[in-house]
Every structure is written in C-alpha cells, then in structure tokens.
Length: 320
Image 1 (cartoon, rainbow, N blue to C red):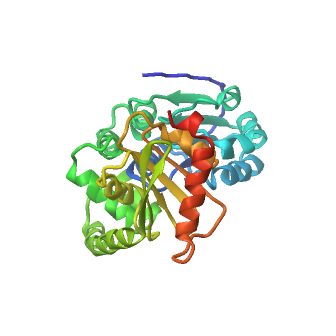
Image 2: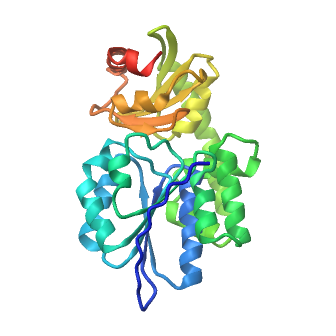
Image 3: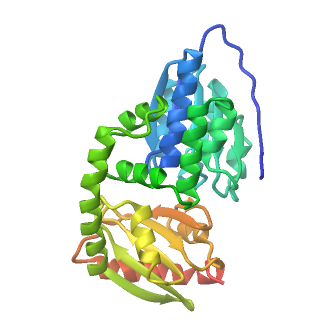
C-alpha cells in the first residue's frame, strides 16, 4: 500500500462545516459520501454533498474556492486528470483557506503539482476510497465498516450479491442524496431500493440489446477493441462488463454526450494512458474520458473510427 500524506494544521473553536466531494456513479463514491455523513453526524458538523465526476470536478473546486473558508473539504474517489490541473489555482486557494483532505485509490502519476499544495493526501491502490475514508474518519464504526466492505466488493469485482444489487439501484437513477442518507443510517435495503432494482432489470436487458445493435470491433496496433454506443441509463460498469465478454483485449463504451468508458481483458494495456489521450484519467484497469462531440445513431460509426485513429496516433506511448 502506498500512502503519501501532506498535513496542514487548523484550529477552530467550533465544529467545522464539511464539504464532501465524491464520485457520483458507483458504490465506492456514494459509500464515501455515506461514511463522511456519519462522521459529520457524530461530530455535530454540518455537511454539504457534491456528487461529482471528472468532467465537473474542476467546476466544483472553483465554486468552493470562492465560497468556503475555515471548513473541512473532503474529496474522495476522484483521481488526478487534466481537469484537476486546470483548476490548480482555485485548488491552491481552497487549500489555503480550508482543511482539504483528498482520499483516493487511482493512479496519480503526473499529479505532483497538485500534491505539492497544502492538502492532506491519503492514497492506496490496494483499497477502495470508501475503505480509506472509513479508516480515516470512522475506524471503529460497524456501519461504516460494512459500507466500506460492500464498496470494496463492487470496486474490485468480487462476489457480493448485495453490493451488485446496490449498484443497480444507483444505476437506476435513484436519488443520490436519499441513497447516501439511507446507507448512513445503516439501511442497506428497503422497499424503495427493491422497487428501483426490479425496474432496472428490464432497462438493463434493453440496454444490452442496444449495445449489440451498435457494436463494432477494431484492431488497434495489434490489439482488438470492442466499441459500442450505449444508452445513458446503462451504467459504464455494466456496459463494459457486457462488452468484456466479447473477449477483445480492451473495450470502449461510448455515450451520447461523448463520455467514454474503458475496461480491459489484456493486462498489458494501461487504460489510464489511453484515457489521457482524451483528457481523462482513472486506473490501469478502468478509466474514463469525454470527447467534445454528441454521438448519435447516425454518426457513431464515424466517431468510433475517429477514436481509434486518435489512439493509433499515440499507439507507441499507450499500446506496447
């Protein structure tokens, strides 16, 4: 486990407000939110949740840099990418006026400029973000430990019926704050979750059928790649897992708004490097990015070819 920590000390006479920024799409990110919410409830601190992704993280940092002062800002399950670097000045301002703790498990190669700021950085590639959050803020809390266990099972693709069912609830579009509030109370299943889960099973099957209808396979510098256009309601994890069963070296899921999700079957491929070509980031095994183009049923084949061509242009750096 790698751990790098930068500490800046603050002293306040009253509880600090907590600003929690964590990933909005999976059990690790929302689990991190729930654990921080339990922490804030225990310490009597007010909490505001920001459900973020890589394409709006910089915007949230800029907003808080202009508004927050003397507060605790916790960023979790969001790694380094070019968007973060673009908000470096705002992040520096945020760190100067607040206690900033960044907790993550993604690869941070190239993020040294960010890590030199006055923030506390907690990092491990062996644990998910929710586990790191739990150990930092709620080390003896049984509910937080269970949240972290479920997040780990999903993030590391382990067998856990409940973890994967909860992920389907998230993917169904269930209100994120309500989901976080339920987990923070130790409520891991209820009638509303059950209803959302059952409805989503029908949507998933339609989503998989749509993937099949909008799927193409390419050869990229000697590697095979399955790429498909997905409906926005089918989560990137579920769509990627479906494509991975095609057996290609790596897969790319493309969404109508230009978002890209990368997963691999071949361990020789570093997906984070591929995502960086498009201004994204993530881990070697799973990454994401976004292109500045709407993708439709009319133009998806052309967009696929453009994506392949862009990867091939950098093939020597990312595919070896």
